[in-house]
Structure formats: C-alpha cells, structure tokens
Image 1 (cartoon, protein in one colour):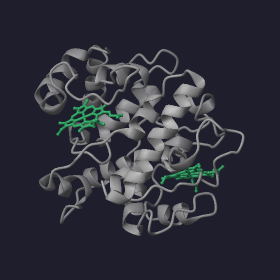
Image 2 (cartoon, protein in one colour):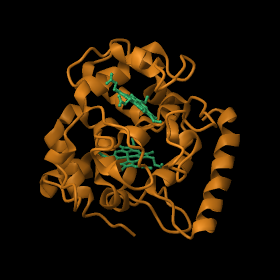
Image 3 (cartoon, helix red, strand yellow):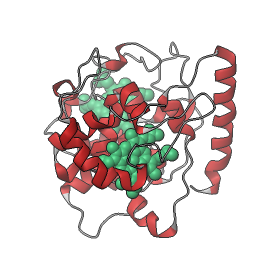
Image 4 (cartoon, helix red, strand yellow):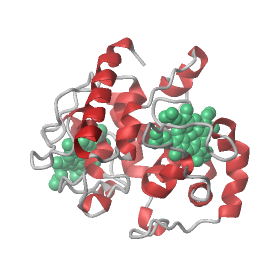
Length: 271
Ligand code: HEC
Ligand code: HEC
C-alpha cells in the first residue's frame, strides 16, 4: 500500500461508517473488501505486483482476473475519487472508487444486467462481457481507453490491459454451470474440496477458514461467511486469487477443483 492511498482509505472508512450509521444496514462484502488492510512483507511484493520473466498463460489470466476484481489493489495504483462516468446517476447506492472496478458494472458472473446485477445495489443496466470469448486479447487496450471506460495509461498500462484481455477472452467460467442462480448452491464435491483446502488454503486461512477475518464490529467475515453470502465472488477469487495480497490462484488445478473447493468452504463456520 503506497502512502498516497492512506487518505483514500481513511475517507472510505469514514464514508462507510456514515453509511452504516445513516441506513442501519451492514455493509456488503464488497464494502468490507474496500476497507481491508494487509501489510505485505518485502519478499511478498514480487508475487503480488511483479510479472514473471516468462509468464505462463494461466498466470496471465489470473493476473487479469485480479485486475478485473480490483485493479487499484492489484496494481497498487491510486483510486479515482470521482464516480466513473458510465456509472448511472440513478444508482446512488454506490459512488467513487468502487464504481471503477470492472466487476461493479460487469459482475462476478461476467453477465452484467443479465446476471446477479439485474437488481440490487450494483444495478447499472450494463451488459456482460461473455460475448468476448475467443476474441483478440490486445483489443482490450482499445476497449479500456474508449468513451465508455476512460481508463488512462496511468491507471491501467497497455501491458496490464492485455493481461485483462487474456482473462476476458480466454479465462472466464460459466457460473451457471456450477452455482444455482437462485439458491447459490454449488455442484462440486465437498470431500474432494476439503483435500485441497486443508493442504493449501489452510496455510493462510486455518483449517476452519477463521484465521483471516476481514469483518468489522457488525460481525466476522471468514471464508465460510463470504462463500455463503456470495459464492460467485468467492469462485472468482479461488480461480484468480485476491488482489493486493499474497493469496494463491487455483487456476493450475482446473475448474472442477475450484468448484470442489468452493463447495467445501461453504460448510466452514460463518460466525
Ligand atoms: C462504470 C461501468 C463500467 C466499468 C467500471 C467497466 N465497464 Fe466495461 N463496459 C461498460 C459499458 C457501458 C460498456 C458498453 C456496453 C454496451 O456495449 O452496451 C462496456 C463494455 C465492455 C466490454 C465489451 C466491449 C465490446 O467491444 O463489446 C468489455 C470487454 C468490457 N466492458 C470490459 C471491462 C473491463 C475489463 C473493465 C475494468 C477494467 C470494465 N469493463 C469496467 C461499463 C463499464
Ligand atoms: C498465501 C496465503 C493464502 C493462501 C494460500 C490462500 N489465501 Fe485466501 N486470502 C489471503 C489473504 C491475505 C486474504 C485477504 C484477507 C483480508 O482481506 O484480510 C485472502 C482473502 C481471501 C478471500 C476473500 C477476501 C475478501 O475480502 O473478499 C477468500 C474468499 C479466500 N481468501 C479464499 C481462499 C481459498 C479458498 C484458498 C485456497 C484455494 C485461499 N484463500 C488460499 C491469503 C491466502
């Protein structure tokens, strides 16, 4: 975290507390996410912000996926203060930097208005990105600099845009194939997922998934909490990693494993 981000973090903390006090509603997981702090050790910074000498296709897609989630945290970049120009004025539930995250308009299911964001606090009416499947990843540079997006090179470089392009054109999954749209139930094998979780995820999250907590006074936020509240988001993070921290990407283990892990973590403690 660069020191230049501290005023932003403080102001979003104040805005968040105000919003909670003003509405009596607890913040969504996305709001909680906005506030999470995590100090990286020097030796972790290369993994989190660096690029391998010869990047593999799967690394490139995961890196793009983390920027899709939150490019500001993934790149240690500065968060714009003003609301994104394509964010509809009719949606006053969200404003400022969160409206610049790709997922805020296009969704954790990549389906935009045709998916989970057909209603709720992230409703924008904007369509998804699944139609980009198989197209040229480099075209993402033009897409991100266009009138609808207005990302400058200082925000997202051409190289970073190409990585996002690899994610968008090669690296998406069909959430409907694995997660029930209405109930959030998942299709995987919890027993097989436990095997991966205990051997890999537990190194940082603990066997119960409760060693890392990004919650607040209103309650804890563990893997169990979040995977039940928003399995679409957690599947994205299991596949790509969590931006700005040393969390691993499970992409090399394949899609089936990611869904099995998701199915298992939904059985872990929520409180
Ligand atoms: C504030 C809302 C907003 C944000 C944030 C946003 N987009 Fe978009 N995006 C749009 C709009 C509006 C369109 C045009 C939709 C249409 O064609 O109807 C669009 C279209 C797209 C398309 C389709 C382009 C095409 O040629 O069909 C892609 C791909 C895309 N966005 C990727 C991204 C990525 C990657 C990010 C993050 C770096 C992002 N968007 C962030 C609003 C947004
Ligand atoms: C090397 C350490 C590490 C490993 C391994 C790891 N994580 Fe994480 N993970 C983190 C850190 C650090 C965070 C950020 C926590 C915070 O914001 O306080 C995180 C965040 C998360 C989040 C959500 C955070 C949010 O705010 O939305 C989920 C969900 C998650 N991890 C699931 C997993 C799963 C499932 C695995 C195994 C496939 C895993 N993690 C493996 C370190 C790790």
